[in-house]
Length: 339
Image 1: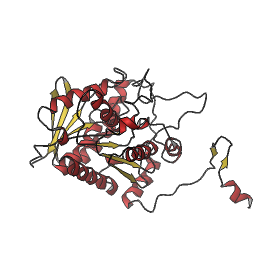
Image 2 (image 1 turned 90 degrees about the vertical axis):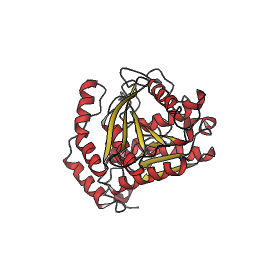
Image 3 (image 1 turned 60 degrees about the vertical axis):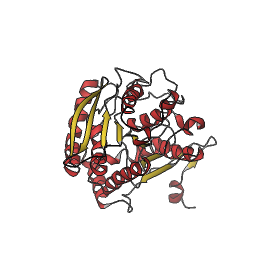
Image 4 (image 1 turned 135 degrees about the horizontal axis):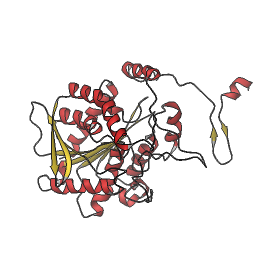
């Protein structure tokens, strides 16, 4: 083997660690032209530092402002009505299709992304708007308690309050729960939490941009840190860990059956039909793939969508055909299972 080829090969340690040589990753020829164009724009985008040291109120305000144009674009593609509403003291937004009747017998609960600390408005809308408009569903987004003001299980307790109230008007088989990123992880936690607290499972759930285990688990957190760059790689021994949840899980066992149900087969066996969405360049791909495998092993109906060349929560980008395909798949999934 010549020296140039040898320099391109990985080197393996006895403990399984792989030393990966530097390489160039071109745009995928299997992704859409729109996705490749979006990739080319990354070179012109400012770097966004993820830090728990930033003022939380300023961070929340800044992220909402940054995502406001994306929300406006989503509302242009998918017209909806948005109403603020409180359910037993928990603030929510109710999203319904604009100018069209919605399904009166079925309802969806959205648990928004934002690292358990941010994005209560923008992320909720980006996740809920297309599903409400396409599926003609009422989607109720839950503005759950977040860090640093609250810690686990505050968010899932808020979900339980809303869910109990909806059970007064809807059969459980007609209720769906979904979310992306932190909201995807929280959806998995909800499917573990509800039966543990004597409540029936919803008809179906959607875990997007996440899995039913902690985010940094598996290969993808390491790999995508260097090919996508949206999230830092897990720290090496001795390095300071960046807690993007701002302490939401402080004092918690991350292998707990509520926090990481994919590690507990008996808990997973109680899950309803589950749709999982991730991307090949998403840090959440390993948790998503692992969760899908464990659900299938537990005998649960699980459907996995992996978007080629897609990053974390790519469903937030309505200009991408891949995102629009995912929106339709979400609607089709709930339409099939909320019967």
